[in-house]
Length: 385
Ligand code: GAF
Image 1 (cartoon, rainbow, N blue to C red):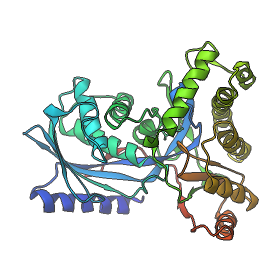
Image 2 (image 1 turned 90 degrees about the vertical axis):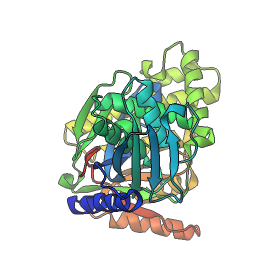
Image 3 (image 1 turned 60 degrees about the vertical axis):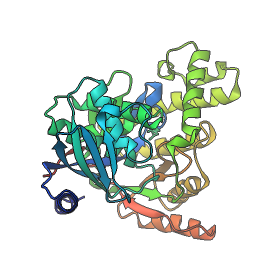
């Protein structure tokens, strides 16, 4: 999002706030969605991830209230939701409002003196497209609440609290990647995050300088982390780690060791996670050496591993990834939790041939055309007004 369109988004949310509440918001904050270059389903296995922030996200216009109530409204929802903070319990709010309410709950559970607020939320992220629209709502709420109540919490801790809200209020056992990307990314960089230690490092990511582009393909197939399949994968990984006698799959370096697991399904799950963590490290080495094009084969291998070993890909993603590469892309893979959402492709400059190849492949199957989104690595959450 350009500075001008971000200012317009902030003004739009502030205008709605004025119209609904008859008062000025104290501020407007934003938090971006994310793409993930590589490192899928490694975060909850205490491995590494390499996401970057998108130029799209969530904007929150907010004002503190003295009555200890959260009044949450969204330009994308019909009705406001009112939540007395004193009655908040894990799981007590359902639906879209559980994401912002979960953040307030987690902050208070951590002993932070956060009180009531009126929140007006706007988003330009498609939902269910695997671009972390939920984490963007959480993180925009988080930066707004800590600013309103002048609470001092590091960005890493804020990511942990936002994730806790999602885990316990929404009931999705997601990892820490999405919230970390939204809060910690820098423009022009991916974020290397070690999900065990919390160590982070910005990694320069400038596709245009290499004559390349990162293209997101919203496949149109929708996913929901709440449908149980994500939780099942997570449980399988925990069982695989137990079978290998380690705390988490992060502790295994050689993908061949997965063969020690008797259960063939668990062995495949482990092989994906162990090999994917290696691919993240290889990708960082390539980027640090200035070899962005070298990432192509890693993206290709990641997709094959997610499709065949982790079994979270979906037909539209397989077709888009294959067509992107057939159309001259250097490598492409499904992104996010799986079973729907988006594909990320590393493509030559204008992306025209891969786009045409994907569109033609979809048309040939009678599928609705996919939506293409540019993905310039952008800045993390912050204050707009
Ligand atoms: C979803 C989750 F929210 C992340 O924590 C991560 O596990 C991802 O799926 C898969 O890499 O986005």
